[in-house]
Length: 361
Image 1: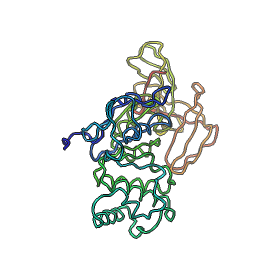
Image 2: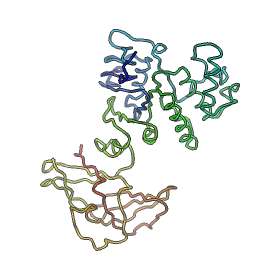
Image 3: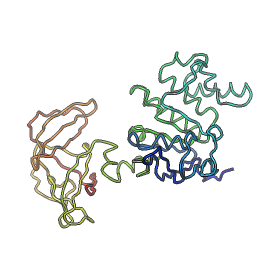
Image 4: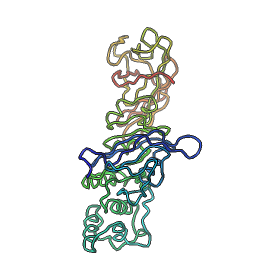
């Protein structure tokens, strides 16, 4: 039996290629019981390949896969998927069209007929599909099919559940509710879950830890709050939301911006830097409020912006500006309805404690 602190799933320096270039490059990851980790990144970054290697569908070129401390795949051995006690759930649900709901859920179960019926009944209740046991997949909505696929995946009580963009086939109206119900069931079952997604909001909503991938590697890993508020670089910040970029050149550890001087310690004179701020962290005022330049103040010097466009997006408004200082363009979001006319002058302030400063690459 595995020790209490032994990871349910561990990937040790996994690498894999499909010819030219590495799809997965020296990737290491630990996943514990009851934990949900999201592999997040753009298409082609290696997320699904990593999942397939963990499942045993693909064999890595280098590194090892361990389940509960036991090596299931390395340079000398490769345990087939059906022996790993790993559940799989894909975006197309992959239900058997010739089997009804009850038989789909029971497909991977062992034990007596009574034990199978009890497990199926309990899961139908958990996914709110009581009375659907005799229906066939083509008689179900997309959300109902997704819940059947979830019940089937957890029915054998796998030690690890791997999910490859399982909610991408659902419309926005259903998606949040199904995600929440799924997460509740997975937590109650104590499953260790590795979820692949390219949607930052899905990762933020579901994950205990987010592993941000790029070019086959995990570039940054942490709790959603930490990875959102302390991104490692411009691309990481921009993956989670729209961003504004203010460029500058370092002189005496300072750089000039439309909002006054910014302190950029550790950067050599002449180095180019980028100051990143999200649209919701810029503030608009109708005048300068009598404030003069003050580079040490929390919001620095107000900068003059000219409205180029404003749009209402349902729960917030997006206002686009051309800055009087240098002609650069910035975006600001505000709750509710705020639609100033084009050409209007407003003054913008930038929250320095909400900015990220990175060397320009």
